[in-house]
Length: 510
Image 1 (cartoon, helix red, strand yellow):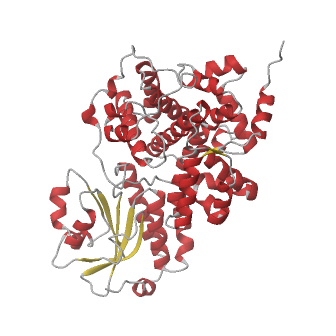
Image 2: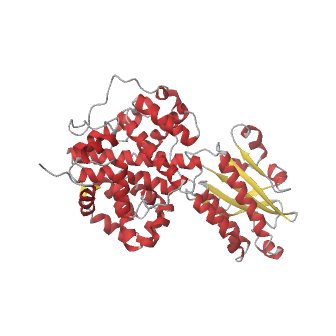
């Protein structure tokens, strides 16, 4: 009688294995490196389309700079800065790959896993942003790499088990029955030995925040699996109720948001070379993708047919709820850790003058709150003009760069510059407010919501901040507005420590 392998035996096998990456993902990243047309942020997005590729990059960083791994989980783009594009290219070129034309059951399972992991990470990041938690990027990586548990089981020759988990209502129970340990224990022990992701490690300090972080990862992976299975109603109701408690939202609203986010995720990854994770895309508002990238015919050994008798979940029966298509949409999510660092570093930057403080805050608003375009327009020597001095934007060139905002003839900016105050231009006030703003600002904002806040120090106008989420998936919300006003208000406290002479000398020239 064969002796059942222990968890330690499985872990030893997994640690000795080298997970393959998807050839299509590797090709895409190498091509972008060779074309030299990408930023670290865009490159990180391409790498994250493949959890195994993400794992290899983090593994290399952990080997080279083990003291930086937790910091990189908060700001993943730093991994690319530490590696450099040349070393990244060499790393990817030497990795074992799943050939793009490989139609074996194992290859199909890994492609399905890659798409599901990416969808889970996409959902988790959105949920974390709504909760305004401090570890949005770390949660994204944890949800993405959570799928490496199943990935390693496939690589160890147990694809049939993973295929069964993918179609089971109780995947954790199935793996426990077959292997003697649950999926969460498997992933936690793998994370302990890899030393990442930190949110999944058993030595991570136990706290309510840890519990909530892991809950968010588990909910997101469960919802991604349900989407891939064809939206089974019973599973969705259970997960939706849990997600509703997690997000403090109604279950139906959560499920409607999951449907919308699944469409967004599919649109954002049209170039990865294999179909999106979410099934039944025509019924959830994405027929153009379903038509252009049909699902490959599944192998009976790898994927069990979706049950047809179970009715679809109520929240997924209204095609008219699908969001309008927006071209060139990009997502920059809040990074609360960066926001906190901006607050802490403001006084330090004050030693270098007003300009250093303002530029520091503009970047903090951009990266800390996930605002796509942030600018500061300073009062110029021509008192009737504000000149944009500092800009941080996702897309370059930005229409705000070098712009001049006239305050003559008198307009709303003239009124706002009378005292420190803020305004949130949105759907319910846009028609009333936009005509009162300078034409250049109306053209820049278009039909997007945006924030404005003026800075007046000792009765002297300094300038104003502008921020929006141009073409962003996440709308501006009250939390973003509160964070915007808080950081701008802190600027005034800091500027009190800078001489009036320095303020005058730092004014922009028209």
